[in-house]
Length: 383
Image (cartoon, rainbow, N blue to C red):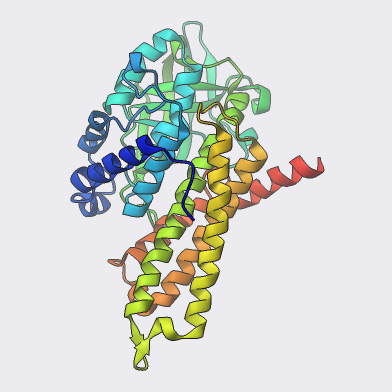
């Protein structure tokens, strides 16, 4: 069925994104995969094209629109191109709201122009070796030293960790930490005591730099506190719905793309003298995946609508969690079934099915695991 959520301006934006991918990303992506990191020039090219800071006010160099449908288009096209390494969604949809919604006027003028033109790449550092989904377990601490914070601790699995110029660090600013003792501190590239560890070797998304970060007596200026002191937990909860929706949007796009590739493959591939598509089992597999994708697409488009053209966070935590766990688990199932239908070819790393299989496996983990999503939904329904 024809999708109803996009207007002509979104279609024009989609064409722009596809042109950008063809010109600035796809010719270089194999090399980025080998390097384990995207070239900084690609970020600047994205800024020049207007793909960064979509929701940032124009006065700071942004797109000036809070319409999340533009972000959805961006996520869909990058997913279909198989290029998750250039993490524009992380920059725009996950980190952007912290800078636009919490920053002071001085901070906005200091950081947002670079955020929009691609000269300041961003990351957010929550996860620690001993604290993943449970923010209450964060041990990184910041001591108030009068005119600065003294930051100590470590983070891991940080996307954009190697390239990042600005890192929003979640740290304890009270001895107890927890829900009422965490704050957001912005650490800038070159700060004394701020070190990057390994560019972690992942099974997928090889071009996306994911790093360990270490903070040894890092002096963070008081003016780099983002949002309210000891208010990080509330700030994080406020922005999680959009993060999870963004992941879900890319998940259903991935599932649909894999289904399209596999549908064409089984039409052309022959076994025992006839196309695979003539076998009832194959037809049933395709029928099941097509139906699951169609139903999921209808729900996801409704979630995008609920989030609001104004981008005002209209999607609640319960439905964002539903969208995230359902769409990402569907992506995982579809990737596995499509690889199986490709046989030995699906196991070859040069085939898009194989890359999608490994690239997509993280989807059910980051942004909150499937198990955490179910817990959020269950609590909302049962108390």
